[in-house]
Length: 133
Length: 341
Image 1: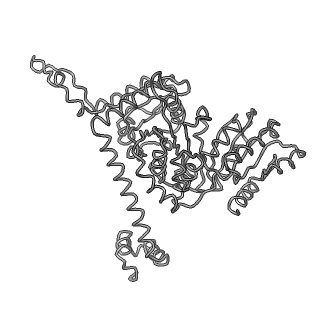
Image 2 (image 1 turned 45 degrees about the horizontal axis):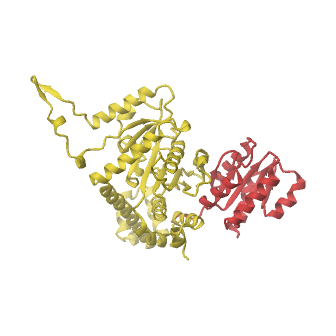
Image 3 (image 1 turned 60 degrees about the vertical axis):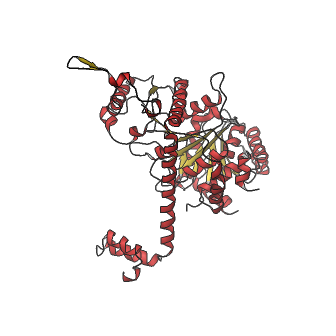
């Protein structure tokens, strides 16, 4: 029957309204054969975790350009753990200062992609993380 | 504990994982469907279909809210949403965007939303949608709203799956010629003109009403040679034989206008189906079509096991070079005369 597809949620937590990056990545992942669930703007971490649970995703992509990543990302990771979804790969895109990267990696964020990232790199990382485990 | 048992107990993570197993056609998913089947048959299955951009997702959002916050005196009902969007025919990937319109439903444990890619199925649903509906039905969701891919004219699988099919139209999409065509309008139990605050809504409604009156002539008392012939009006058929005439409702989903009326129409249709015996008849048709699909799929799979890829490709090459017709080839492959080709 049909084979396993990689399922991804692309979400925009917080209050900034710049969703072009999220849409470009979503489109690239779609073209790479993944099933991308797009949740739209201004999502709370709770909404994102709930959607991840209902959709049984392998990957969550968070696009944040507001500067609030150090409060939003830890909360999403915490909620995933509470829902027994620790296996879900989390990646973050947007404007993330270099100083914050080590702390995010410590939290378990698998990839941090700033402006200029090639979508091929994101696709390769996701495939590696999901299919390789 | 099996995923199915946990899902029956209300574990949402188990339910979600089980849906993936069903979607991927795994052994565990298939076994769970058999285990759960005895618990199905309780939910009201409501299909929502129509062209893309008519506002199906927003309407589903509002309907779910209506069932969760019903008019005073009625019990809230548990609602599941299955939202299908198309898979790319080239990459096999999909962009599932229906949740964007359903953000009002977040945080309510009485609601479960699942997005689904069509994965190559052409009838407006995915192959596993029927399985999803069974799992959600068994898990105790009382209303299951199934939103099809943006359907044009012929994506009518939903009518076989749902008890009640809502066809969503919007002003300005087509004239009375579109309304007469066979297909999607014929499967409507309820017609909704969404975005009814837009210009042209009267024309849309008139076209739909004319189309319906051709299908269900209204029995006006008529005069025949000066004598009033009102037999039809004075002796209406008994309630259990009255045909359902699809109502035409106007809504503005973004503002929640007309949703109460739509909720009432859905309830009236469920009552009608039960009173007339159509509920049972539709169940039978639905399960029959599911059985046939399953038989077809497993027959093909079983047959494929007995034909080597080499033989299959050789026959295909003969067809391409016009030395064998597709009909002859199919006949030969099915009759096991592979060696002759």
